[in-house]
Image 1: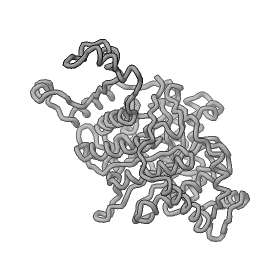
Image 2 (image 1 turned 90 degrees about the vertical axis):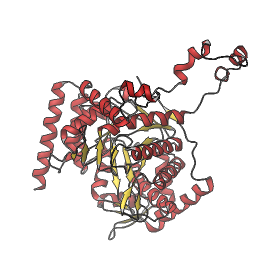
Image 3 (image 1 turned 120 degrees about the vertical axis):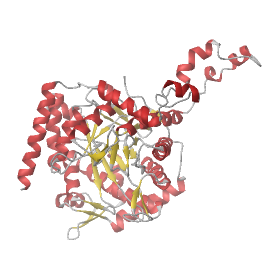
Image 4 (image 1 turned 180 degrees about the vertical axis):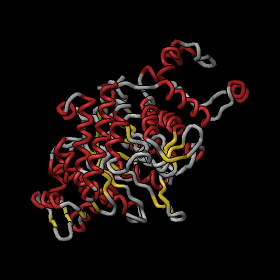
Length: 485
C-alpha cells in the first residue's frame, strides 16, 4: 500500500512581515559576513559563479542574485525512492512524513538495560521500525560501538538497507562514502544504472554552526551532486552557544548556512533535490546540555518550516527529546514536538521514533509508543472533512430530537473512516483493564516490540544479496582503515 499523505500548514509562528525581515537579514549575512567553506575546489566554483571569495580565509560571500538563481533550480517536488515503489515518498512543500531516529550510542533494551549499542541492535531496530506504519524514511537509529568507527557508515548501510524497503537517510565520512554506498545499493537493485535511476537512499550533510562548511561535508555534497543523490542540507544549532541566543537570530544563521550549501549544490548540478534541514535544540543554561524537549526548540522548528516554505524548499525538522526513559516526560515531549511540527507543515519530522536522552539512547519501547503518538498527531493534522455527507443534515432530520445515531446506517457506513483506533492506548474502565492484563503503556509497548521482532523478518532482497552487501561493507571499511593508516 502506498504511503499516505498528510497535509497541514496552518500553525504559523511568524507573520509575513517577520518572515520578510528574517529574509533580509539572511541576505545581509550571506553578502556581508559570508560562510567559511573549507574546500578549495568549492571556493573556485563559488567564485566562477559570481560570489566574492576570500581564498586566504576561505570565506564565501553570496550575493542575492546568485542565491536567487540557485533557488530557481532547486526543485520543490520530487520523489525519494524505496527499494519497492509502494515505499516511494512523494515530496512537496505541503506533505508530511517521518524520519526515524539517528546515531544513538546506547540502547535501552527490552530487559531494561542501558548499554552500548551493537550492530545486532541496529538490525533489530531497523526490523522493528520497518513494521511500524508511521515510519516513512529509515535512518540508522544507533551507531554500533562493537565495530571499528572509521568507515562505520559502510556497515550501517548494509545493516539498514537489507532490513527495510524504505528510503534510507544515510550519512558518510567523506566523498568516497557516496560511491561506496552506491556500490552496495547496486547489489540490492541489480546494477549501478538502476541505483542512478531510483536511488534508494539520500544523504545528510551536517554543516557546522556558526556559518561553517567543513571539507568532509563539502566533499560529500560534490559527490552526491555528481552521482545525483538527493541531499538533506542540515545545521544543528544551539541558541546561546553556536548561534545567537534569540530564536530570530538563530533563524538567520540557520537559513544562511543551509542556503549556502543548497546554493553550491545547485551551482554544480541544477535541479538536484535538496531538503532544507535542521535538528537544532536549545542549550539549557542551567545544565549546559542540549535540549530537544524545550518548548523553544519546537518554536524554532515551526518557524524554520515557514522560512523553508518561503524559499520554496521542502523542510526537515524535529529532534530528540530529553526524557531518560519511556515515561510521562517522554510522552509529553514527543507529543508536543510531533504535533507542533505536523501542524506547522514540517515535511519530514526527523528523529521522531525511538530517541531518548538527548539523542544518546535508542529505546525499542519508545519506538512503538512514538508510532502511536505520531498516529494521533497526524489524525489531528488531517483535520475534518466538511461535505454534504459529513454535515449529515438529512441524518439529523431522520433521527430527530431525542433519537439515537448508533443504529443509523450512516454511522455503520462511516465509523471506520471517522474513528481513530489506537493499538496501545487503554480506554477501558479500571476494572476491565485490571482483569484483562493490568499492564501500563511501557509494558504494553515492550510486549508489542517483542512480538514484532519475533515475527517480522523482512526479505526485500534475497539471502545471497544480503550476504554480498555485508561482505562488501566489511571490505570497504577495511580498505578505508588501511588507507588512513
